[in-house]
Length: 206
Ligand code: 5GP
Image (tube, rainbow, N blue to C red; front, side):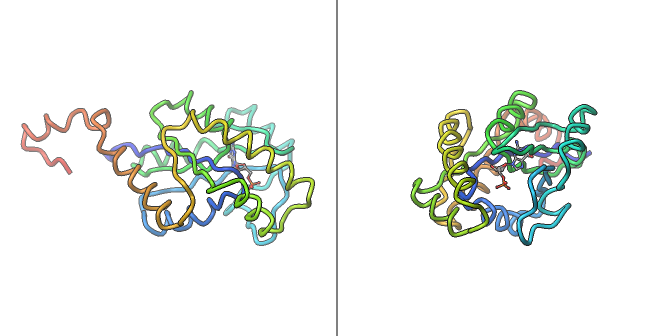
């Protein structure tokens, strides 16, 4: 039977450049699976239903919550966001590492529900850079942009609740830091308690 995979929570303020990090992570680690969230916000240009998000109505979202089909959910800048439970549980059992790219309220819920998860906070180099990146994306009006910036400030205060911090200054460094965290986590004694016994029994250890 496959070893159970790692559940990895990554949070970063919106506009922190995490989309690019994710793309590169998946290019380098083919055992990793990305949970596709559901949201009630409108798609941005280029976003595809079922790939970037499941874009659903508030009524549909609330029905999923009531049916217990959301692993976690949160309201963020006026919209619901949540992680569908099924695919995450299936992938973990199959031995895949599963990445949840979610905000801090959801991160706290997952940590409570599955304390064995690994949580990583990706910090932007500065608030100034974060604002520049958000403006550069040009997908929000000024009011939403200001709201996102003030939410980002609040979110950064939660960095202390995470296991690891990754600085998103240079893309290659951020990606290799995250891969290093995953590798180290898999080598933790708590995840390999029977390995000495396997060595003594001449069983395959890897
Ligand atoms: P955006 O609207 O920029 O795509 O996402 C806004 C915020 O929602 C980001 O911080 C993103 O990480 C977070 N988010 C995306 N999907 C989920 C989810 O399933 N659950 C929670 N709690 N947050 C999510």
